[in-house]
Image (cartoon, rainbow, N blue to C red; front, top):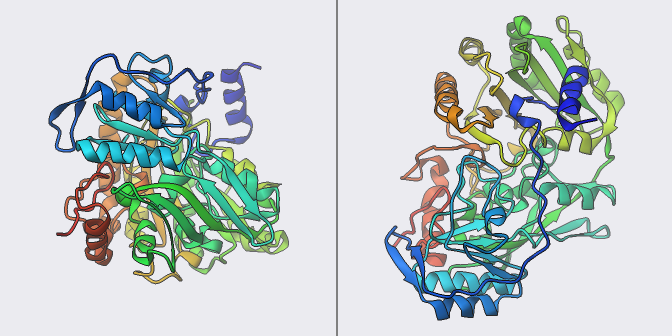
Length: 502
């Protein structure tokens, strides 16, 4: 069956993609070609400094960097350049002066030192899933971890070690083989690195907490080129900062996670109602969710299918005894007249990969989000009034609460512990000519929901401005001091940037 026909059949038969934007079908994840030899510079290379000034990188220094790498240095004109510089979001078409395709920690150290010594703009690419495209840059160096993907699991200690370029699918696959799991996100080709450093919401966060709550240690190369292993005992301030402070503090090359025993065959799936029943569903959910167990992850989405049919849907993962899950879900399953109830016992990875095609590599994607302290009647009304029946865009949520809220506000650098859920307006399309129109619709849609939010989740936002660090709340002052200690020159600035304190 052709891929396009398969996508249409899947949507018609089972809503197999939670948010089935038309653009999600027909775009495959790129497959890397066999590696070509590292490039050598024949002349000096035009580049961009940290402050945006034009500079020239000397030919001899560039070639020396290339020779120092166990991986490859890729320059414009190299056979792999146009493939490697691409990131997930097709809206970002940037051209780095250099791409350091790192193979190990020493490569990362050499690339960081090269950049710092020349005041060169730096982008760090793990999985390349940065919504605003900050994992690539024009005129700087891309430190690319895409070949550092190993995940090792120790069943005896129930720990996983994931390299900085690993994807969430790699982490899930390696852990589940041993009947273990940790919180991971909702698109399996997302990078472990950026996802973790920003906090880490996923379908198990109510039971096990955010991904950063399961982070035991990390290896990181700081702006001085030093390799550090950080945990609660070694560099505890830096370990605190990277759990929610994003990529401000260095290049994380390895993460060590706590794992949990887990039966991968879980009660999960979707319930879908016609959009005409949206008020009944949302008002019921607004009362019902407050008594949910930690085992139950569930949240509403409002979207329009490619054929123009609008629906409200609930995604469900019950990470406990399925008998209890059936009892807990029974009131929801009796609500209204569902168009489809596809909650069944199935492998956890079905849910973890169901959105991979919708958010495939190359899609042009935009998103705005906010953290919701309480699902009020006012927010329900706003969700209904703001809804736009456009197949390119959807409103959906990531449920928090449970174990997420039981971590203290300042125990990590993640500032939104008291949110009940996250509300997000986002979507995708393939035609660049639609960019401005679709983004304007998305901004206006979210603008009507924003008054009911407090702060936002940095990992899922396209263009939010936060020059004074307000989104970090009471954590910001400490973050700025730690930034000043480990990155006083603000080498790592392509992120939700924290200005280093003097």
